[in-house]
Image 1 (cartoon, rainbow, N blue to C red):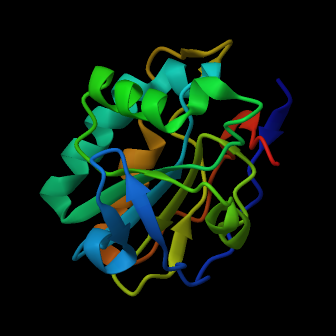
Image 2 (image 1 turned 180 degrees about the horizontal axis):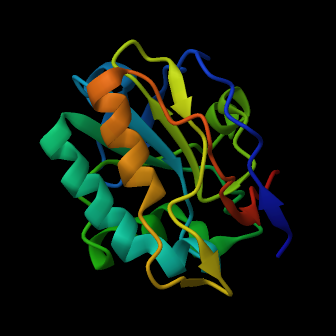
Length: 183
């Protein structure tokens, strides 16, 4: 497991469209996903300990963001031949186990991860209603895969700010996790 950190936010970068199959066997595009006040694109996988450490809070965050008309989508781009824990069937199980209330999409060709410049799981891209990137940070501060007491949910706060002002926070801390498993 190679630890990666996300690069700094490239404010204003436009969101990329996609047409990917979800664990519900439907295909989704950006038009299907985009929220009125913002869109959160999350690159995750099933096996990464960094994702597993935050997945319950992440599911809750995505659900709470709906109150602000921010929709969320998760994309899994790992090589499933060499990492079978991330297979499409296991994505279905992972989604059900963690009560995802958002589409969980399979980027089998890894084209979408490359377009976005995703580097790790989890990797968060927060967009405003104009589909401009405003957040590329972490969920919250953690130490050894455990949230630090008293630390705020930075992702939630950033997406609420984006939903209300169209601008993300200037100070952002990188997300870190397992590198994307490229083919």
